[in-house]
Length: 306
Image (cartoon, rainbow, N blue to C red):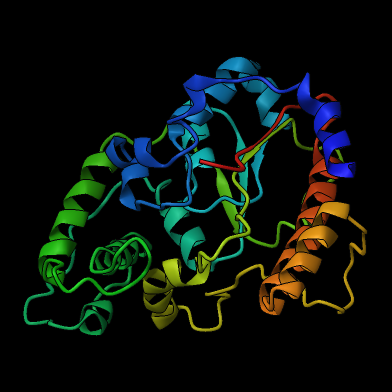
């Protein structure tokens, strides 16, 4: 009855938007400069960012003092597309390897790669690379030897071929650099400690879903190479569900969460019940932080389904 009451309360506020059907998936990113570097299946289309900016027009001066925020930045779709349009944006992402790759998109050029002839293993290539942009290229090349789920792809092209292809792509895109540079930082969306109250004018993001996707595994190929140079630099961080019964900063009672958790326990899925309960607690903290940093009246778009 409580769930039905909620549905009745919100029913009149729901609208059907067919134009969003393709924009809430990452398919559109595969063909666009900078966004095509890393096909991230959990991302959204840069077209969604353009729609967000079109429906919330502001002057460049306004955005300079009140940026857009993506608290689950991933590969930087929001921050990169905002930079293309001269709009200031801030990204927060828990996986340091993805932050490194996203920030590489704000470089201004791609110098020639050092000679990597005779190197058969990626570690041998890594030892010859000093520039961050070249290291980003190797991370992407190694990533191309894996599936979008992070598993090794036996049919992938040899590393040298993949690296040459990646370098050509990055060089082409950086020959027309982004109009401005934005920043993406390693952080926790549940605790946006570097952002002041009301400092954000708009939020556009796609939170992790309560699903069986292992977000850490998807990024593991990039993270493994990243940590070869930057051991101890925060690689592999991942927001995880709070353990059931543990102390949480957002101890809340949510009927839907309790209903789902109790049902999962009854059918013998205690682990999934813990995930469901922890996920709601984590997202409650995220929503509270978004409410704190968002200026009153600012738009907040969250992708919650494909």
